[in-house]
Amino acid sequence: MSAFGRSVVAAIAGVALVVGSAAVAAAQGPWVAPPEAKNLKNPVKGIDNAKKLVEINCVSCHGTSGHGDGPAAAALPPPKPANWTSERVQKETDGELFWKISNGRGVMPPWKDMLKENERWAIINYIRTLKGK
Ligand code: HEC
Image 1 (cartoon, rainbow, N blue to C red):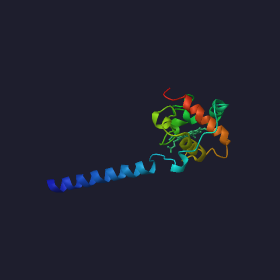
Image 2 (cartoon, helix red, strand yellow):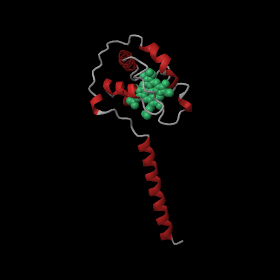
Image 3 (cartoon, helix red, strand yellow):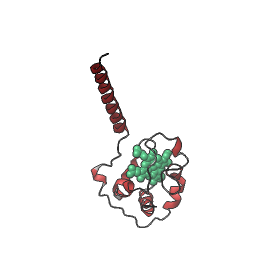
Image 4 (cartoon, rainbow, N blue to C red):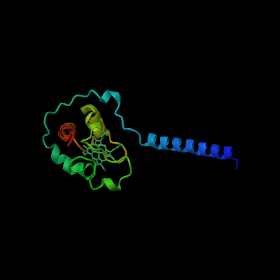
């Protein structure tokens, strides 16, 4: 093959690689709550028994300190359990977190039928206490 031919093949392979990884990124892309979720107001003050609820329902994946490193996390395919202490999670509104916790995605379970609304809001208040920790 000519040098020109080889570089064309290399260029095509390069494009295929870029398109391929873009497709993977889209399939696992950022998880965005719908705009109407953003301004939902958290009616709950305080964490009530949220720490306990988290220990029972969430730490297997999200870890005891919320870093996304629970015992089940290693075996899961990406996207991995979110790190609740991270800026990415903490800069979301309570409404967005509420929507995600309620609806789930992939292996993240939908909690709307398993935890009461007040419990889900209290868990968000608890997640706020982990900010930057
Ligand atoms: C079986 C493992 C598993 C359990 C149990 C679990 N999660 Fe998750 N969680 C995940 C995974 C995986 C993601 C990332 C999902 C994605 O990005 O598609 C996630 C994402 C999240 C996010 C989204 C963060 C963001 O903004 O992107 C929140 C909030 C969350 N989980 C809260 C909870 C709460 C609260 C519980 C317990 C009531 C819980 N999770 C239980 C696996 C789990």
